Each structure stands twice: as structure tokens, then as C-alpha cells.
Image (cartoon, chains in turn green, brown):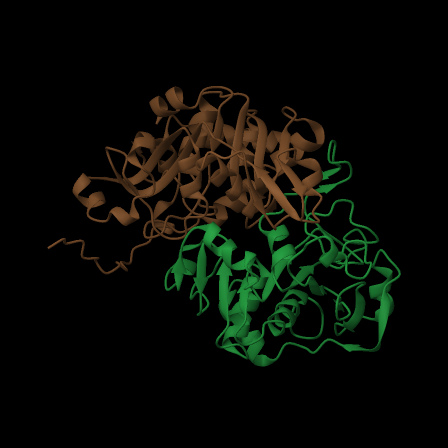
Length: 258
Length: 290
């Protein structure tokens, strides 16, 4: 638990992530905190959003029981569609997925994510689990968001391996030149702050700092010379309604009070 | 089960497993491969929730062709890490995919074409490390992956190979069509009258299915819609104990080598804690023809 504010960093991250979901969005939900973010958004400002899961599911209402994975039985009961993965990917390949969430071990200033290898892939220092659907979301969804712990070893100058591309080398038009269908990352939500990208992509900047932390602390824990927005402020705290929602869908605190 | 694995999963085989993603993972079949000391297997799947990690740690695997390998609720696969980082218990070759591209690799094999083009993976370094992927003219070509055998756990099947599964299917259908053979393990062995009452729900052509194994609880700790929830504490315990090679050996001794078969394994598990007790049946479909 973080001291003071009455919510954990993970609960704040879920609340921030939920606000990225717009009403009517088709959301590629993914795993862990985004599952909660989807539930929070549906119960608040995005009552007509729909969620897609690569296991082969579409839902409107969030699952009524706790989900350890997207394939858990409560996520299937009451689904709008239970199908094969390639059907879900078809929607994303057509550019019909508005927003995706991706977890990452390493992200760089241009939003490129590494979930594959730290060090030489032939003899890695750390073998990470891999893409899953991450690369597909990064390339094909209209916009995407990543969530991670804010540490220097995770927010790095240059991702040692690009599993899921953001804005590549950061030059204007990199995604279009390389044939990437979707628009790219819009936010990096961390345990300390929210980083955003300029319209049209490019380099991440510090947009807001979570309560109890400072911009200096964020900069000290970021592996590149992070640009700071002129109007950087405090990340809006989770509302009581958001917290109630989060605690309803993660009653034991498995994801948010670990 | 022992017969099916002995006969259809020889050393060196390419085996598709866990193709419905988190649900319906054929853990019982995987554990039988470990007990039979299978070697040099190539494992094919989308994400593997701990089963790939266990087979890798037991030294059964030469290559992994997958989008993700780890423990979905707990994170990293510790045996996968040891194999890739230290060559323990043996070096491992990895053909990285995304979920979409591993599906396409199987569809390519299913349709008997060398490659299928896609827009995914453009700009990803996965293109550089996996020789089965190449970019050309703004598209990525995904080479066919043809498993020798796909092993799939389902809710029910008849003795002639008609398998019914429900819930999300992941890449089950393309895995079954791409594979030379399919081995089905099932919660319930039913009469053909049950399976044929709903031919839309039959997963594979019966001509692909070479064995049906009645193995209730054969997917534990993974979930089976209508039968069992996911056993989260079991995954957590595995993640904790597999952190060291010694801890993994101890886990393997307890849960795989220390039990003769799945029935003995299930005696050690609190199945009632994860059993689904409610009924939520679908409405019947009328297949009448006149």
C-alpha cells in the first residue's frame, strides 16, 4: 500500500487506464490491470463499450466473478461471442479495434515495448515470456496504452528488443512508412506517473505525476532525459465510485493490492 | 493415456498443446510425456499457461514455437528462463510468434500453402529472430507450421473422435486441421447420439482424430467451462516452487513422477474447490430436415 492517499498505485493505474476507454470503443482488453480498467469504464463513463479477448471472446458487461485470466469461466458466461482467435484478430486486422492494452517489461522513449529478450536473443540475460497478442495490438489497434512499474531498468533509452513497436526510431511518419496499420501508443501509465505522446506520435513526455510523488523522482527513475509538459500536474485520484468498482472486481486485491 | 502418448508422441515429434489458450490445457497428456521421458519435442501453441514450462524443465523439449510461454496469472516461466538463459536442463531453440502469427502458421499448414501474408508483425524484431517470418512488400509472410500431433482437451467426445468443446476456442481448429493427427482427451465420454445431435459443435473432422482418452480432470489446473474453474493457487504454488531448478525437481517429483496417472494426481487435489456446480445450458438447436 502506498502511504496516505487511501488507494494503491495499482488502483490509481486502473482508474487512469479506465479513463482511456471512450464510450462506444471496441477495446482489446488483454490481461491483469486492464481487465479491471474495462470493468471500471463500463460501470462509469463507457456503458456501451465492448471488450474483445484474444482467447476468442467479446463481452459487453464485465464478468461478474474474479478473473485470474481472460479465459476464466466467469468471462465466458454471458459473453456476446465465443469464437476462435482468428475471428477476433480479423476485427483488429480491419482496423476496427479502437483501443488496446499491452503489458511490458521494457519501454523506450518512442513507446517501443520489449516483452521478449533482455540482452542478446541468442544468449539472453533474461528471457521474457514473449509477445502473446501484444505485437498484434501494437501494430493493428487504432491506439494503445501500456502499464508498468516505473523503474529505470524498465523505462529505457532504447528497448533492447522491439517486440511491440511504438513509434520506431521516432522520426515523423515511421509507422506509416513501415506499413503499420494502427495509430500507435497514446500513454504509458506507471506506478509514479502518466506519460503521453504528442498527437501523431513521437517521443513520450511527462503529463502528470501521481499524488505523493514528484517530477524529480519520475525523472530520476526514467532511463532517458524525459521531456516534461509545461502544464504537468497531479494525476487525478481515483474517485470513490472508481475505487468501489475496482474493489468489487478484485475483491481479494490479487491484482491491485499484491 | 499412456498408450496414446506412447503411440502418437514419439521422440522428436512436433506437438501442438494448449491451443485454446488459458482454458482446456491438456496437462494430463503433458505429464504423461514427462513420465515417458519424451525428448527433442517441438512444442507449438499460442500462449502456454505453465505446461510448456513444465515440459521444458523436464528436459523434453528442443524447440518452442509460440507467442508466449510463462504462467499467465503469475508471470515469468522459470524453467523457460533457465533453458534460454543457461541451457538448463538443456538448450532450447525459440521461434517467437505473436498470437495472430502462430494462428496463421497453422492455417497455412491447414490449407497446404507454404506461407500466409499478414499485416501484423511489421516493425517488430520478432521478424529478425524467427526464420519462419519474413517481410516483403509491406506484408509479413508467415511460414506454415505443421504439427505431427495436436492434443486437445474438451468437455465431451464420443469414442469415434467427435469432440465437442465450448467457450472460447483460441487456435484449436487450425491446430487440429494443420496436424497430421489429433489426440482428444475429454471430461465426459458420450454416445455418438450426443455429439451428432450438434454437428456444428464438433471441433475436428473425425478423420484426423486417432485417439480419444477419457480423462476427467485432465486439464487441471486450467479451467474447463461448465466443469472446473482455474485453480489459481495451484499456479501460484508452481510459480513459487519452480523458481529454482531444485524446487522444480521437487515439484515434478510430487506432481508428475510421484503419481502413476491422472487419477492418482487428482486424489491429491481439492477438486471440489474448483468444481463448477451450477448449470447454464444453451438452448437446443433444431436440426430437423422435414
